[in-house]
Length: 279
Image 1 (cartoon, rainbow, N blue to C red):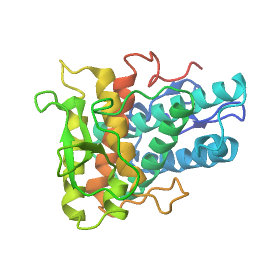
Image 2: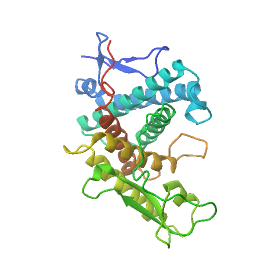
Image 3: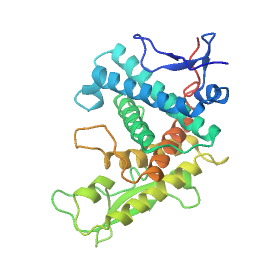
Image 4: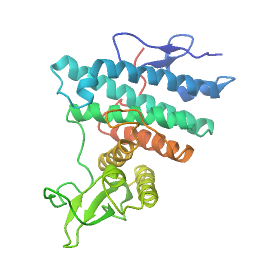
């Protein structure tokens, strides 16, 4: 019987599982032949967490927006980083599904932080697509803005296109907003209701991304934006990438599912993104 074996090298970010012959194997395939499969998932999360710590040490200044990649080597490293993160997040979600398990809160924290790092790495490489409603909103003026927060969907008949928060002014202007803005920088906001609306839209966008008629590229952009907006509003500090999950298992499940769906959708235009590395 194959036993867990994590393969990780100093020359490459991330890791993969291998069977006794040294051949790469997915977490779900490994768990299917293990007599204690539920113990593999925490091990996967801890190894992913170690990868994130390594990445923060190597690319923290770039991921934090302090500077652009200095050369092709750093660009290649960021590319390798985000692809490893995307694959490992997808593997975790796939293993949960195959085993009929639900993630713990710790899973939401680590996968959420991983998703943020993937988004930051792709942003530094210019690989992020447009946010929902990009180019369709008004430009905000300087100073305090009076209006009402509203979550705007792009198209109710095409849920994979998602939506975003806007501020609707009394004059009818629609200004871009974020969940963080509503939670921390606005007055008169029903925070519980806002979180509920955002959660529902992210879940429906995630589910819609797997529809046969979904535009996978547009879906990945929509999921990335909604997930990013949620995660940025749930960091443990303004300068931190560590994610908190005060909503418990429900929100942890939402985060894990969304991160996996984003990777799955982007695999359409990035062949091999969620495939195992070659031994």
